[in-house]
Every structure is written in structure tokens, then in C-alpha cells.
Image (cartoon, rainbow, N blue to C red):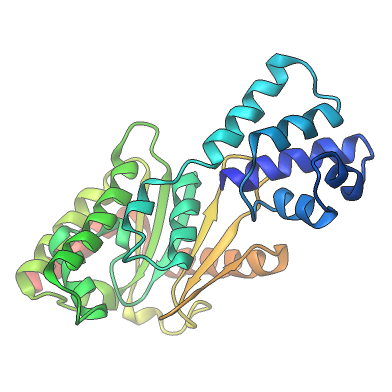
Length: 277
């Protein structure tokens, strides 16, 4: 995400000066395609290249250059999730980078409690379901990844999480009744946080626009970055950022929020489920 942010800023500077990608590539002893990849955030940045490009683009003041050069250094620093690279697929590491940078996440789930709202016991049951051959050590490391992701949402300056889940999610006793009871109690606690909104789509709502499956929309504080829709599959994921795609999913999410129970009724709904467990 930092590479995307730096790349977009370099592109704006280049275009403002009317400099072609060929000219920029020549300046850093590369090709126009390298400049394109840099501006899209698809490759790492050498601090020397960024420095040369800033000079070419007329950014010579040390005070103006410093934040961009620092961003280049930060963009090459591995995220915390890289130490779990042996158990995480590359496509999911991409998502973790996006999630770490997002200021707002809107997610819809119809099978599991969203990972950011799972208790340790529930997360353990989900991991064992998806990775039946995993060792106990691997299971615990995967659970730790989820715990680390969750820490950001209860820390000062936490991003906003708006989750919509199907009623089946809270009715399915994954991990057993005791695990599910603690999970639902945790959902009640989390829904009371000022940065967390939780809505339940009741069975009585019938069909709705998101019947195709779960998805997450990520929004970033940086205006230059477009929203991203994340669609996870069994062995891969799709990342959609075209405005037409994002708009379609945003409409689906808005419709879900209208179809679902109001946020202020979530606690009473979950307390009703608890009584039945």
C-alpha cells in the first residue's frame, strides 16, 4: 500500500511537469515500463531512483523531498505478517497490507464470523476446518495472525469496521456450543465499540443483492487511493478497484445495510440467540 501511495504521488509530479514515462525511465537508467510499474506500486523502490526522479520533476527543496524519500524507505520495510510467510499465501499477504492501511472496512459474511471479530477459540475452530492437516503449531500461528490483525481495531486511532453478517453465522455452533456462546458474547462487546458497527441479516429477509457470496470493501484515508473490493476464494483472491466494480459492490453493501436489522437492535438479537444456546 505504501508503494501504491508513493507511486501515485510520483505519477502526479511527473504529469504536472509534462514528462513522459520514457524520459523518466532514462533518468533512472530504466525503461518506461519500469516507471509504469513503480507508479502502480508493483515493484520496490530504490531510494536513489526516487531521489533522481524528484530532481527531474523539479522537487529540489529538502523539506519537500524528505517525506517522499522516507516513504520510499518505509515502502521497502516488510510488514509484520512477513514472518508468517511460510503459512500465508502471497495473495493473502497482499490483503493484509491493504487492511493495515485501510481507514474503513465494510465486510459481509454469510458463513463465518469475520476474522477481525473472532475469539481465539472460534478462530481455532475455523482454522482447523480449513486446514485439517495442519499441525497444532501451525494452527496456533494462524490464530496469532488473526489476533495481531485485531489489535489495530481496539488501539487508539483505530480504523472503522462495519460488518454485516447473515443470521446463519450466529446460529451455526462452530466449535461447539460453549465456543459459540463466548463468540456471541464477544460480538456484543465489540459492537459496543465506537468504531465498530455490526448488523445481522435475518432469515426472514429472504434473498438480497449479495447472495453471491462474502466480500470486503476497503477505503483509505489517502484521497489518491481508490476503494478496493476483496473477494476471497479457496486458493486465490480477486482485488477489484475499477470504479464500475466498486460501485456495484458498494450498492450491494448499502442494500444489505438496509435489509439487515438496525445496528441498535444487534445486541438484543444476539442476546436472544444466547438464550437459545
